[in-house]
Length: 531
Ligand code: GLC
Image 1 (cartoon, rainbow, N blue to C red):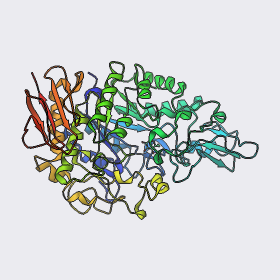
Image 2 (cartoon, rainbow, N blue to C red):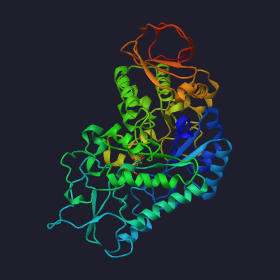
Image 3 (cartoon, rainbow, N blue to C red):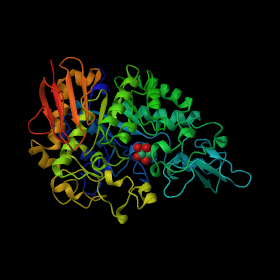
Image 4 (cartoon, rainbow, N blue to C red):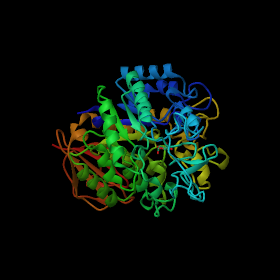
């Protein structure tokens, strides 16, 4: 089985993981310092969000040089040493490639905006205004705040508009230009030659835009993504052009010249699942990020059942699914799931373990977002500490900062993340939600994750086996992973006890001290090995 199918991935937001040089911002050497931790947990691969040269308007997702490390994070030698040390421990590293757009400070854009006829004039998406100065079309930026902000920004110099699906400091590249494509492939080559194990492709469903862009009005576009639910938002005008899918195939052919590299696409669309499949069938990305799953999770067993049942059947043998419960663009899973519930700290731990069980026992590649494994929650960010450009636009609604706060290593003032005040505030719950204390506590969320990962490694069925729903009770989600040493997973998503019709097998993991089958207590999650 390919490593990216059976491995457990861990996502690192590098600014917030570990500060090694006392500037309040995490860095590459900080990650190297924590390799023991990944070994302890049993992580097979880490995905590091962008650490390339960037003006940091979108904290690294606005790149001004694809092949150098931003000094805030260290230098290229630090990165080489990280790869080296990780590989010696059998840990793979994938990096984030942001090829839909660059920073407006990237020398390519600086040149492109100088005139209409310089050598890079066609490297971005420029359009003339309408006869009365109108915008080329009515698309709304994905980063709009309270109002509807256009994807078009006027450039006084060229007397033209340029397109940016995200912030105006993130102009979209013109993938139809051959030189642009060459430059992108050169940058991939740079990192592949250095030995990275693969890429996460940011905003990969948006690479190509419609040729007749001016005619593409999206009347359904009412709000920006974060003001609405994904279903309300109309993405189609800039999603999944056939040209993008063909390009993905070229990217994969290119990557296949190297051994054993993995590709993960960030695919965003109101077409959810359908698009994931389209992007991951044979010859395309290995995995698409299952953002749909993340967004649709709730404390409702019936809903989750329908979600995972459909997903598993839909992917079948056609492509390989992934599962994600959190990432740097969303609120943390625990915070979302306890909304509206009256829960105490014990319940919170159980709910964290419940979702860990789901994440790590479904048929597909699991991605753990840093901090979920200790049960971190969203952190309140006062107005004067908001950093996220989108968060600023959305205020008083929280943006993405609350889920990006420093990793809680211990209970000290800055949670062992840094010696100085970190770039984002530390959550007060660091005094009990932290790695140092949880390592020592058998019953901690951290040690539950560790045991789950180890059961996953011990049971081929959990990694590779087929998935079969078991009907027990509406409040309960239960399924069996078939194969050698089959495992049955039973989860109670309600705060009530339930009696189920189940006997047999050996309980190998429980988020309570001892099972009391056939009773399931509130938020109980069990793994049962059967013959
Ligand atoms: C992706 C990233 C997000 C970033 C955006 C623009 O959605 O996950 O963090 O802001 O792309 O690059």
